[in-house]
Amino acid sequence: MSGAKVLDTRIAYKGKHIQVREDRVIEPAGYEASREIVVHPGAVCIVARPTPDEVILIRQYRHAAGRELIEIPAGTLHEGEDPMGCAIRELEEETGYKASKMVERAKFWTTPGFTTEFMYLYEATGLQKTKIHPDEDEVIEVDIVRSSEALQMIDDGGIQDAKTILGLLRILK
Image (tube, rainbow, N blue to C red):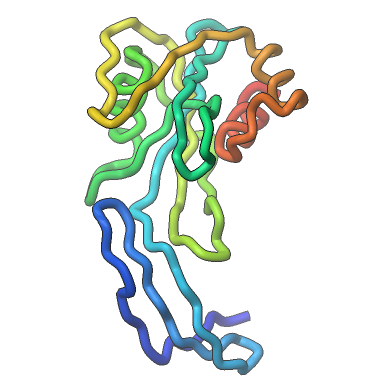
């Protein structure tokens, strides 16, 4: 199956972190359609393991969800930034830990129905404590929990963030 043929494209909105693009396309089935696309630079997420049976989770308020969420550390790629470098930077910024070993474990589209966001999942081990230094607009609580507890939080509905569920199931199961 080939892709859609783009007839026209325009930027409907340009913000600090994202753009919204409107494309007029002819879909592979031959239908003309309008597609609204959130253009995102991509991101990383990290399952950080202080010991083989522990994982670092963070708690932070997410305005779009209207509540605090429990997540694995994550962050947006800067323009031209290497995903591994971003993962190293974000882990220290959000948790105050550096990893001696960082291994890519998966790559995935977050919601390909409407966004270009592509995410890289890393596993971090050999952690050394440094100092947390979140972005100025972030208020983050860091928790170290047993891996079995983190997996139970998925089952109990305490963890509802998709990248966190995917990361924990991919690495801890």
